[in-house]
Image 1 (cartoon, rainbow, N blue to C red):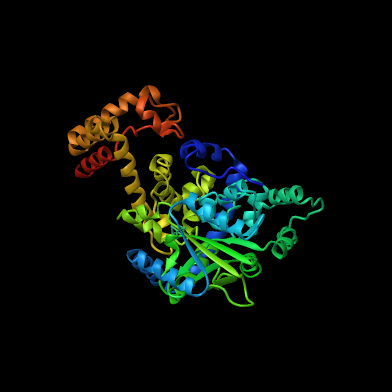
Image 2 (tube, protein in one colour; image 1 turned 45 degrees about the vertical axis):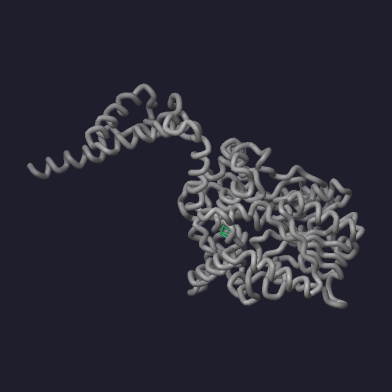
Length: 481
Ligand code: SF4
């Protein structure tokens, strides 16, 4: 049941992939419908809170403070987790994290592991790494199960199968579970998944999870979820292996007070997640006998070192920015070529990967600011996008500097805008130069050379026969008469 994971190193650039997605009407309908529903629920839940802006500010400050003292909080977590009977492992990158998880699963004698939904494991392609060593990973989250059985890829960080509708899910279940007479109500589909997974919960003794939060003060790990499958994976198996990025740490247990209010409201429009699990080490007669936490860097320290990009690590993976983004809402997640899609993907992926694997992503945005407005930890995504665009431009102009055609074009534009006479002359010239290209409806469908980029995916409206300035001047003269 392995699938080819989304990998920015091998995926096509965003404009290419987006073109394909835009041609898929069904996908666009599914994405639009799902994001509309979640956004409406989120709005209602957020408006209920008079202190929403204070909660956002608190979240931002906790994240800022944690990142400033990250080394100390990570060590504090390790101390407290170990004292409670857990084992902490450190991984420099995804490869190392996969190797540690595989080794631990093998030591536990596992040929199969049950998994709680974790984007971190998607980021490092953990399922494929386990399978290469003969260990089958079974996803237990409903959406992840749909993706796994459908040999598909996640397209949203909270609702990975958001691009599928109920009929498509029913087809997958019918085929892969051999359920010819399966109905298509949500209850039918949930029941099918429940029966399919129950046997796994009761017979597979090793589980792999991610973490929403690592609590430094207690050494505890917190996972929030909606279905209860996570709770089953945390309590039934003998061995539990948790993989988390270094950015998942929070200082105090009390900090959960903020995030357990902002995360569910932002993610799924709920006041509270139905299941909030916090587990700390091992306890006689209760939960797993062996508990491991693999804390992974995977380029996060580089992000931390970048003063402007650092705020990306504040992210609590709620997905609200994806639902609000006009670009994501048209293309869906696969076009981003990474498990992190939408605005957060557009800033996270180029920073976690070598920039050249994802340099089209900072441009996959209209910079409208909707993502910033909904972010529960106030990440200024447009600011980071511009910072990354700057890096991309710098990379491409290194060596040729002022001779770069784009730089030359910008210089010419700057000169035009600096002088009213030159600007008017350019407008006049533009109006006569465009004439042969304008169609009967007043649109330009093709532009030559470098300008062609403007008309690649849309038509350009012809310049008006009279500018606003000309109209204004005429109007002034009329009134003076
Ligand atoms: S960037 Fe903000 S809105 Fe987007 S997923 Fe992260 S926390 Fe949520």
